[in-house]
Image (cartoon, rainbow, N blue to C red; front, side, top):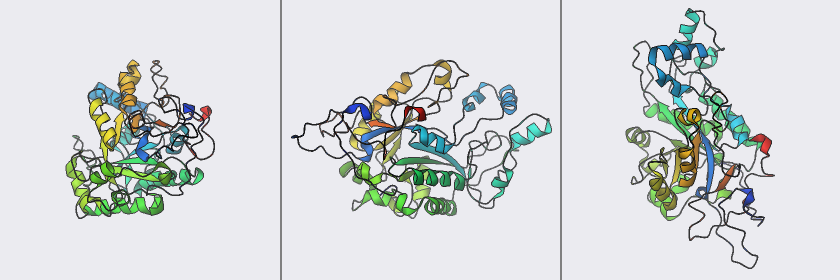
Length: 395
């Protein structure tokens, strides 16, 4: 998971590689043949991980640290609101959704109740929003429950409104994790499973808010091919300018859950979201390969073949605490289209200076694998957004 409305015309102005950062081909001389137009998979952008997440209440974090140990430190990160991330140049977001068709299932988190019972300080909690029927957006039920947009409707509306204000923006990828795993604590809320009704409701909500004209769906990419895999490997992704202003949604789940989503929709026909199917699967188009150090060669091969790929520059707060940049640098060099991080802004608590920005500090750059091959794509002067390039103050 053609994408998102209001296409614009690409202006190849021949003003040099600086607009998208290093690694792009120099502008062709005027008498040279025109280069092939850039496609969706010819660029590289930043992504955020668990993009909706707010910080845990400090008092709750201390209680959990004492009871569960240092594994709780892996939850010790937070993000800016979704629209602020988009202003900063993030072009892939990640949402964890819980099925709550009757509402109220997540309106009284156990962790919040613990703080209240002990008279400990805590941030306000919007229980009313959680009472409404519909998908909820949070990380871990009862424990890591604070979200900038507690309902999927909230999150999608923020994205739609931002898109309205920024016509011609680069396509935005949104990955969805469909959460239904119980916790070991018997007192914790048990999530509802994602069945056929849940999948249908999830597709319907995305369609209702974002709108079909702003979505790039599997049917749009497959075309007349028999499978998505065949389409992306043989025909490629749409031209970049044809998908400006649009959104792609992808379901990031194990194969069994992906097959559940595809049931009754062979090859994802009629579905809203792509899926992170294994690269040999007929529905494969988008891959999640999270370790660029161990699997850099696999990422590069997949990118060169034509798949879209997401990888991670950091995980579990480790790089931010240590300042290590090997994983970040490997992620950029791999050619993965979406490099995910929790630290597009430095966390000053750690004092390491760790931060993830694209080389050149831009919203997007030429994909280092796709734009140095024999195809001769020229993205030296591709326009990042409509209008002017984002100013440094917004990064």
